[in-house]
Image (cartoon, rainbow, N blue to C red; front, top):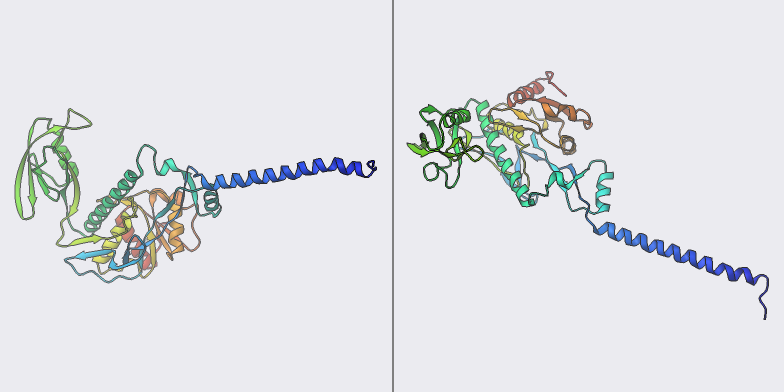
Length: 364
């Protein structure tokens, strides 16, 4: 039997059709394999976005986000004033160990920002070290906030020992919590006073440190060692802090997972609101951010746009912005959120009073 004229083309078409089918299937398999790889490999980016907020005038939450039933800010030894409204601590969320699909999904949401992991978790530092540093910054911000708040309320600040370096001249002679009264015969009213007194001596010199521990006074005679960064300069071997002289204690309790120094301003305002009859918020939901030092200066922070989004999402209508963050904040203000520029804690207190009274306040 011979092949008819209609059979020949059919025979030659079988090869190309099969080749196309095989090619399509191969491409499909390759695409599926690519999807599997993309879904399993981590990208070297971290997604930053609006994090949770916490009302510092309300109850605290634990690391699981559950209500602890206890106030965030507690005053021990003095009745706390009733408060209205909210003073919100704001945060930035950081999502790490993302695959390609997760990273793209977060990026397309419009609220997340992808940044190189190196910017958040430097490769030269273990992650637990970064987290420890954030926790230390947070603890320092609480102390600075308490000092700034009580100083704003008229309580004097004192120089106290925060830490004694093991093996240093002060080891065994001074203790954390000691109040420094004088160093080398010069009054120790500020951190600068102590630095100046120590700087007037060289390694090997003896120096008397007058201190108060509880109700007792004492004198520690130390022989100055060489400073680590400059062998020609002397050092006692202590870390100091400014602490308020007040007949009560302020305690702040927040989840351990919250770190960094940016909550200082809001902590200070919450302490003031708890200790005065003035209602700082006027019943409003107020959020804000900014570092703070014991003198009450408000410093810039990162992630301002994410923090504003998180604040508005959770109901805030007013947001306190550090003066140095104003330019960035003004470029992307969430609808319904009023931003107020602050440079110092005193500014913030005054501007909240002006808001309550319907007066104009500075914006960005």
